[in-house]
Image (tube, rainbow, N blue to C red; front, side, top):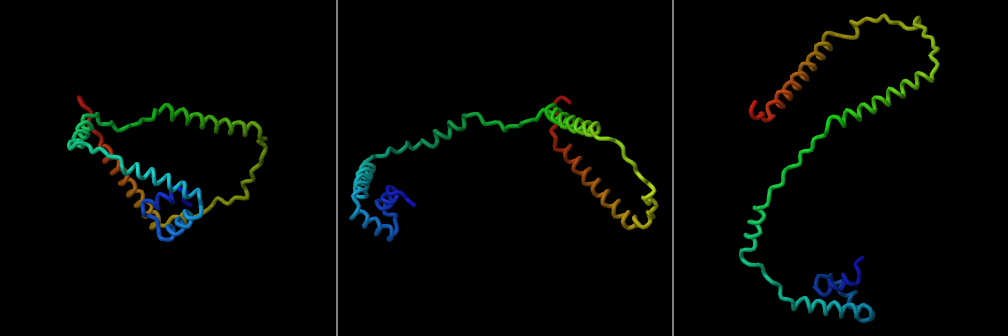
Length: 165
């Protein structure tokens, strides 16, 4: 919902719809508050219309662009993360995990029995690995190795050479 001032400015500028004009005309005829605000906004509008705006000189754009060109160009930020920070955080988490694991082993009682006679470890590998499955596995591994080798060689190609080396 627009405020009274916004509605009246649209009315004064002539950009309000026909419905809004009818509502504003009715409010101006009946409401004293609307009429006071309308008179104030008309006075402000008349003062704004009497102002004489200065135009910039013909060479204003050229002068501004010359000053902009004299400014130093900003350097792209290249942030580098210190590896010691990464190693410290990784070490903290690794030590925490090891500490929790050691505490869990210390608190638990290690008395358990494992009856291996229930497990059947004899299985036929011929049924698990067919020659076609083995060939497909090797093919996928070779393709992944070639993709990795390609990306590794491309990465080395794009690195700039060091001066004096």
